Amino acid sequence: MNIGRITAGLVVAGAVALGLPAAAQAAPGQITVESAGSPSTNVGLLSVSLASTTAIAGISVDLVGQSPTTGSLSLPDTAFTMTGTGTNGTWTVTSPITTSLLALGSYTINVTVTYQGGGTASVSDAGTLAFILYPTITLSVNPTTFSFGDTVTLSGTDLAVYPDGSTTPAAVSGQTIEFLGSNGFSTTTGTDGAFSLKVQAGIGQALTMYKSPLDVAGVADSTTAAATSNQVAVTVVPVALQFSDLSRSPATVGYPGGVTISGAASYDSGGIWVALDDQGIMASAKGDYLSCRGCSGKTPGPWAVGTDINGVFTLTIPGPIGSDTYTLGAGVPFDGTPWFTASSTN
Image (cartoon, rainbow, N blue to C red):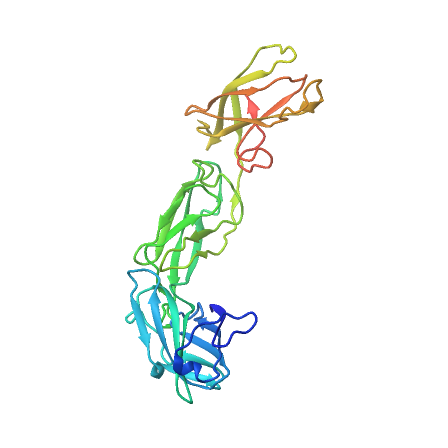
């Protein structure tokens, strides 16, 4: 529920004073809006809670769209049922507002009260009615066990309870579904609320930032709230990584020089060695890169470079460097990446 406390009438410490018509000012009326809005589980069930120093006989509400395309709706006193008292009561619509009366969107709540002794007072911008869908996203992953390069399908449904409070969820159409942990992988729900997204594990940023469990998120828009799916546990089976045609230049490094390592990387895909295309190759010093004289302020690594379409790379380790052993690996991050077993050379 959207909660806010707005006071109209006499100025009191910590309250917002709103001007009243002359008739209302004649009575010592002070109104505080305790809350105005609706629960996300039934967004059509608008309620307004008011506290007043003078008993309130009834209220009317104007809902004004915060977008030029959403329009407005006026609700008379007869649309509400009051609980509590005239000085501390809650007015709730007798029947939930439906999309046949009001388009989905956000609305400013303006309240007009009628005092039991006569006179009226108005409270502008008493709150916001978020008359939008609050979806539930269900995700499945197939397969849940995979290796680098395998095709993985993330699919599911995007459903929401509509504002009339119906117990049967309906499809959310056109919401953007983003694959969390990736960069730029998204899809849109269909008219049936279904979505499906195919990615290649570890390739093109899909599942590159691997984590388990996996989930997806629905992106909020003007008519639908953001939502995150259930989480699905997955397992990566590492595959062998191989480096070939390795060379270094120069063959002997003279202080304070650096070294350039070149080669090609491939991985085992069902017994076939496939070029590791467009992936990061990293080199890490086995020893202490900063131990050499004059190395203060130098980056200790790891150093990284991307492979080309054939898995070929050229990686430069800047000087000054000392005598050391450098380990090559692939994946992001270098430490703990699940995609590959210990690398080898041929």
